[in-house]
Image (cartoon, rainbow, N blue to C red):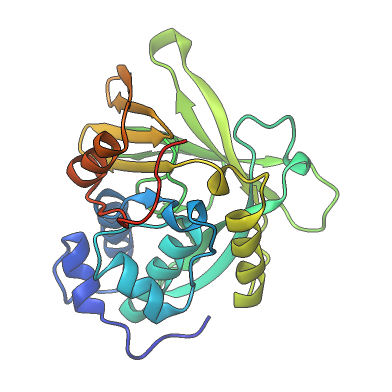
Length: 278
C-alpha cells in the first residue's frame, strides 16, 4: 500500500478534529488514533446491502471523510494508514484473528485489519487500530511490547504471547473487563507481524462483506465511542456502555426510529433505499 500523494491530509485532520502541521512522533500518533476513533463511526451498511465496500483510497476518503458515513475495519484502517503515511510514519498493514469469545486463536480466520507503525527515532513499533469497533478496542496507539499495561482513555490493555506452531511470535491484544475485585483480561484479537498486501485485504473484505455466514452481511452493526460512553446498535438492540461500567439497553421498533438514531447518535445518514432492521 503506497503513499497516495493526492491524499487530503488537512481535510482528514479537520474531519477528526486535529490541527494540521503535526510532527511524526508518538504524541501525534496517539492523538490522531484517538481522534479518529472518536470521530468516525464503525458501520456495515454496505455489506448489509449486499456489496463489499471499495478499498480504493479515493473511495474510502469520499465515504469516511466527505460523507456522513463510517465503515468497518478495512475502510477505517486503510484511511488511517493513508493519513499516518502522509504524516511521515512507516505503516505495515497486518491481518489479525478476532478471538473475542473464541476457544482458541486457530478457531477463527484472519479477518481483521490492524496496523503496525514505526515511529521515527524509536526502536519499538506501535500498534494502531481505528476499526475494531468493540468496547474492548484500542482508542489510542500503543507500543508493541509485553509485560506492561496501557491505558487509552478509560480502557486498559496489554499484549501477551500465545503458543502456536508458526515461526513468528503470536501477539494477543487483551482488554481489562469488570471493576474492582472482578477484573479480568479478555482476548480481543491475535496477530503476527507478517506484512500483508492490498490483494489480501481485498479478498478478506469480500469474504466478510458477502459471505452469508458473516454477521456483517446479515444484520445492522454500528458502533461509536464518544467521551464517557460507547454506543452500539446490533440490529434492533441499542446499547450504551458508560466509562464507569454502567450499561443501558433498549430495543428499536421501527425503521424511522433506527434512521433517527443513526443520524443523531452516530452521525450517519443511511441510504434512503435500504432496509435497516431485520
